[in-house]
Image 1 (tube, rainbow, N blue to C red):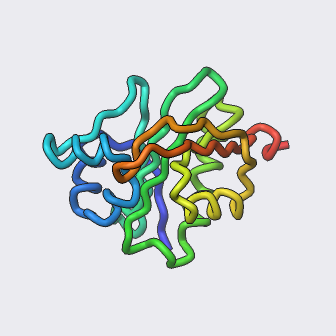
Image 2 (image 1 turned 90 degrees about the horizontal axis):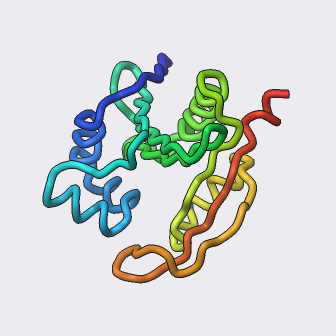
Image 3 (image 1 turned 180 degrees about the vertical axis):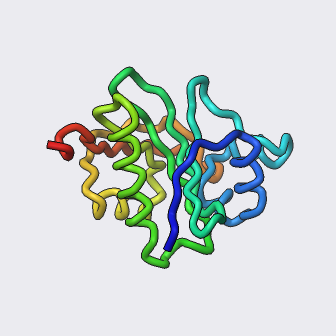
Length: 160
């Protein structure tokens, strides 16, 4: 199976999301979902990078890497619903971890997870991310105020 990682543009990400409404609902918070629906684009923080994971030349996953500091990134992973539960997610996560570690100066990657997204928390734990903390009552998720759970991956220590 041929899997390739390359930087993509915002319009590629928008098309990827719009083509997969179920993924939009599963992966975007209320504000981002509303904006995508009305404006046909997502808002990205300044300095964000988008990486496309292509499987046999088809965009199957997008990783959004948001600048946090010179040594830390916040990342978001959007896996096409056709690829979820196929066993490829862990392989994609490993490839992306290696890509970030080997091609950036980041030493740590953080994953922000809305507390109701238990499946993402389970995946983060299974992949070896460590619980970093919780910010309470700080985001809207499906018309409810929820906590944000933070998991982290030490990229530098894993490379030793």
